[in-house]
Image 1 (spheres, one colour):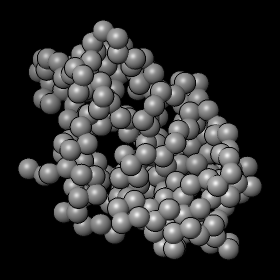
Image 2 (tube, helix red, strand yellow; image 1 turned 90 degrees about the horizontal axis):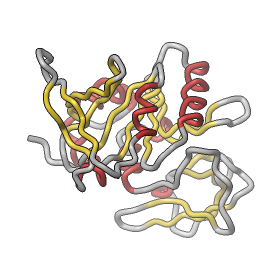
Image 3 (cartoon, helix red, strand yellow; image 1 turned 120 degrees about the vertical axis):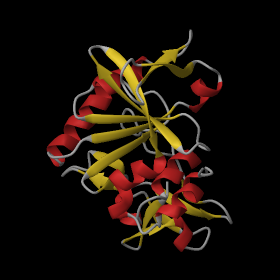
Length: 232
């Protein structure tokens, strides 16, 4: 968790001394403490954690690297009249959900429908971590689609638990991207066409330009340092 409320202000952990106490912005009844190191700055709960709604997951360094691409006020945004959801990134009228672990498709669809009502002209964008599957060869790029430039099939190996990802790709009003290697300059964009999962390469820079640039003070040349890859 990057942000907490301290004396009525929404503050990043890096902007306060280590040990500062505050409260969870989403669940104000829970106290948090700032842990500020040279490389990592975050808030931790001091006495028990709230029960997160279905589909939400603990923060990781991978989540944080994506959130670091945009201005502070565009991340961990509490949405809805009853604080129903917390968007990982809300930028340029796009909600971007950074998902590392499995989410039930019913919860994913509910979240998409919620954001679609909130932002009728936008789509919900999912960035899903598939690095373990890619590294273990349970997921790989397959043959190119005939007469289609930069479009290819994805190959899932035995034992891969990927149905939930395919279900999200089937959900209307979404765009889905796979992070297959954090140190690579590309993502895999996936979608369903005639019942079949197709894919294409998309550079992280072009993803940034399309969805995040207007909500970031970063220069395009700095993106690779934040996400941890070497540009070609």
